[in-house]
Length: 306
Length: 259
Image 1: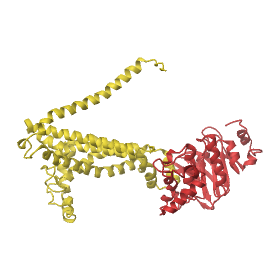
Image 2: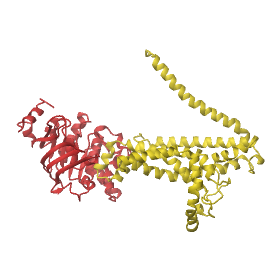
Image 3: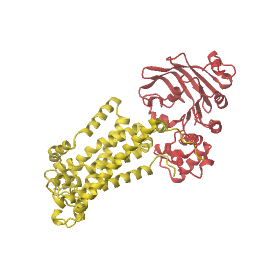
Image 4: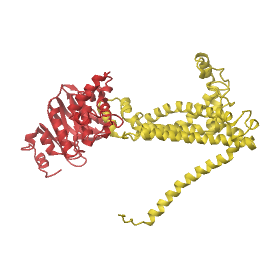
């Protein structure tokens, strides 16, 4: 039996089509970017030595860039996420309300600082100031491959770049996790407190499990930003397109985005195509990261039936 | 291990607002005491002062004395965390920890006490507590499944199991059946009957039949008027309250003439 079709109202029709159009716009824009990268990047995939700055083929050209991109982004995340969680928890559960509001505003303000300013700060302030730390690391834990040295005298290393990236990621991660922590059901918090939980135990029992999927999404959004960040890295890093785990030396892997920004205006012909192809690689990496994040979030959804 | 509670001259505030005024009451050990009264009269607020959960709300505070077996709960040397380990609480809506399994929920309180439990000890506690909460037979085959997968009534009994797993002296229940259907309610009421052998139980309820069914003593709270503080009007054996109460207001409330 066919159910009688409900009456279609004009308002519903207009609204549903408007939202559909908005959704489609995203798809079209994304497809446009993808097609552009494919079409313009394809010739770059077969580029020769002269267009790849000495690398034999595209793969060996892009591999160090991918390595640098991932290394800088992951380092930034390792620094940023614990800090951001701490800030978010202190805003949502520890600081007095008035202070928490002020901290919240300041963190949001950090997100509004242009990345070129972070980059300048990285070169002008953080780089020189952090050299003694690198010297110390080189001297005392130099047996770790990460701190093998010789340490950079300018401080323009991948670690410095990662710290700058971390500062740029913190506001995003903080803002998202703070909102989620504040939404923890009062019921769950009181369940923990009534069992005799201290404040920290209450956070462990009620707040963090509730926010787990949110923490993962926030970290992945942060990772997305760190992967694609261009200006700050291009300014701070003294790059030489190598693969190395040494975080404090003056020879550092570059990142895809920074490499494009630094060399695109001088590149012509196939060299330009190769750069666009490296952009395609970055595009794919961010896609994979986002899908992985979704999968993780879905797995940890609280109350999910097994 | 059950203990009696003495409350004297207790005033309860939310910031500057006096919510409950001048409560004096003695709650007997190993018995069930019911708190009844119209909405907003402060009975839940009062209940939450018995394990210092009241002060969790910003600005909330109390004046006066609450003593469990002579030990004052509000001494400056007393840690509220210790109080809450001694006085367990069950809430209006079931609130198992959403990411934990049934067994983990039962053990949550013990894990907080930093007790190192061997596997067999943990299994014993889980079985004993779930038996105590009349839930064992229903869940024994799926202890590893999420606590949120249970029905509302089962979740509430899981919360009771969680509360008694740490063997508290006193068990507070804040309208534990108000979100449950009649069958689950009856299961929880049966459980209350069994638990009073071992625990001092204080229960807030809107259901007067329930108060009459489960409690030995009943305390009636009322408001003098909107914006005025709640007060304890009368506390007497439940039989007396429901037949010949001392106060006219109690009689009026119980017979349904107001509230």
